Image (cartoon, rainbow, N blue to C red; front, side, top):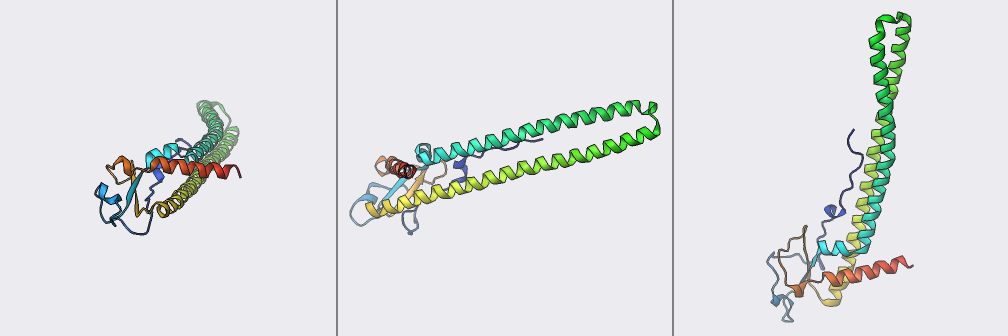
Length: 209
């Protein structure tokens, strides 16, 4: 029987397109110093999503929580599966032994044994089906929590960037990293550390309420 649950890294599900305003990007070229001047040109900055997630306490806490739930579910099912496999092995062994002794058993007794083994086989099949459903339900439940976490993270980051764009006058916030489209950006345009600091402050504030 294949593995019960495999925790999927949350970051693989998070494709955050960080737009600080409704204006779409019209170019994928690297922002230059002229983009941040006060001459009327667009003010563009970027966030490194990999760095942000590695330091964002809400993400780290949720990731740890989901991994713990996955391990708990897997451990619970693993015990049931082990017990099932032992019963299945015992059943198969009993069948082989009876087959080897079939010539020495009276037809009536052999018929009763066949009926008994047939019922046991049906029960084992139902038990296996039940375990498969439990495994699938656990995976579905975990995936649902994962999607909820993704939405919560994205909303909090988007809400923060909306406020930041209004405060700083940013027109566009790009994303750099494994799921981003920015290949290079000047260090002066990187607002990752500031973003992490303020997001963590907001998160800590919600924990103390």
